[in-house]
Image (cartoon, helix red, strand yellow):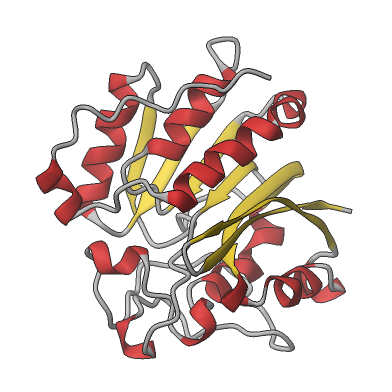
Length: 241
């Protein structure tokens, strides 16, 4: 398969990356994983695609150009950083993809249950002090009950600026663990969830937790892995059993 072109980001200046996460090794691994799984995604005939934490908009724009004009999908993104909202919309427009970008924490609270066909998340996965993390709820860890509703708009401490794109707290899992209990209520029956992780996030623990009855018994696999400096990056894929 020939390599699908990376979205044109020429409209973003160096100064923009003072406020918005600049595409890096994790971003490009994500793009490669989506291209690797493109036939699987096309076969879903997705109606709604949602990216959480869109940053520059590179990933959703890539998905939109990958699926092409024949796809009737609605492309939604969320980010708590207002600069990322503007950048995402602009990146989509520059590359011919219409993106509805919302300033929201994780999944928007008004999302219809089990409506998302493709869910994408490059989370803040870096291990940092807990006080640096942007919060909605207290972290949910394995062997705890998930919240019964989508996250609302009550934000906790930490920054909603560019720092929120990498600050992951304990094990780099504090934002990840707020999202995971929501997946079973958000993903459609045929839906798929792709997420970036590093080794410090304990990906096998994540996969085991998501495969539990409590979390919806999701099947999972590692789509791609790559070493980037000292980081061991992987793209995890989850779908209903």
